[in-house]
Image (cartoon, rainbow, N blue to C red; front, side, top):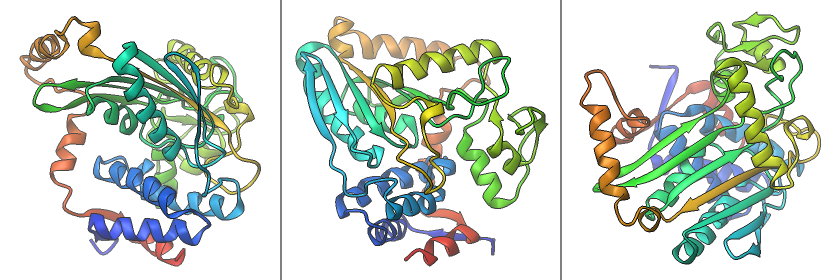
Length: 332
């Protein structure tokens, strides 16, 4: 256990906010970003957690991310908003989008937010879950810098392009389904590279197109899509929704999320909110439980996201690698 440091949530929050503020980020944005990273740590998604702070801080210090950006919302139709993230962090922009969508859906039944000039948005489920706790059904699509080649190709064109869905439940936390369209989230390969640990076969290819278990070679190469050719088609669909439809950079046009080199990534996210009770005639919550019961009555089954909820129940402290802790302390 000497290789792990246990920190309370408050200690993590103070550390993250202090680091970001020290690297040219406003208090408000630093808090919003840090809260999202801590939520990922608690949910067991360390690839979207505090391991991102060094690169976030470096990018804010270099101006690749505008740590003081304030998102600008423009209403473009009765139930549609366009959110300019201002080349800042994605989290403040998506928080504004969630607030706008929640208000619009009360009158329109369904609403959409197109976010552009954005950045890495962490756990996709984090954002739609915030809609679901407000009683809304949420969908989000995001694109990211090139990491997946077109099926049959060898050079990256698309990002890992995560998607997530959340729906409210009666007297239970929302059901959240969150997945990357690569066979494994790229953040997990980044964490393996930081820890000098091999990755599983079948996750990625090296720059020459050969299978690899070396995380450094995988980061320089391409990720494999889930579902092979069908998955590659889904990746392209999300690229269109998150980038073409929002007016954001495509994955092959975006700079890396992992370093401070180059211009802002300028990627996009598309978020959809629905008034589930209105659309279902008031039956959504009850009807959903019928489906969930049919799933859980079979031995060996579980709901998507159940491990996340179990992790939250045990989250008295957050354990991070000592090497990462030392790196974070050096950034103060």
